[in-house]
Length: 218
Image (tube, rainbow, N blue to C red):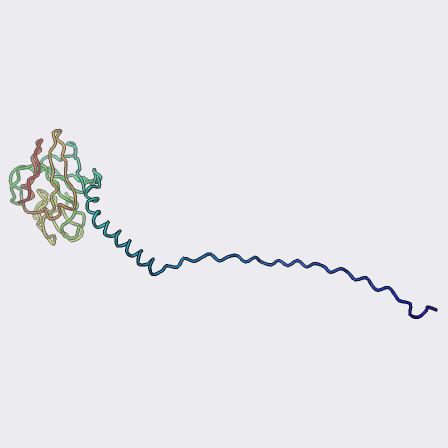
């Protein structure tokens, strides 16, 4: 028989377990750049200065800027082998956007007088700007071979691009040219020659002799 009051051993207490907690680290928020009223005024001021500079320097820089040659808007050289025979069908010079004619001297079938020679006609119709082709098969007024606009039917003579059927307001425009020592032609092209077409076109043809140039429109 066990004696009363004998103390019993206490149960061992297990040690406390450490608990790991993954706590996120706060990161600073990037500072936002707010456009102030002062900054807005300064931005407008410098923008105005920039526009003023473009206005003052734009024209001189445009004048001094070198333009490309060899295409529309500049001089086009036509070698002698591309010049049609007198009275022959016109030749298209695509890089310059013009028809090259070689008129016979005398009076044209339409009644205009011509010294004969080279004449460069812009292929653009003076009506709405359509490209005007040479139509060797087209018959009109008892003759075959005309320049005829495919858009609205404006029709022009072979001998100078004289308007004979509207709605185009005038004859085909003329590009001035100069005959070189080797017999080639240098033709000036560009939109600055808009408005040069007239009933005087045949009289502005250039005899193909070195030094000859297109006479001015009078």
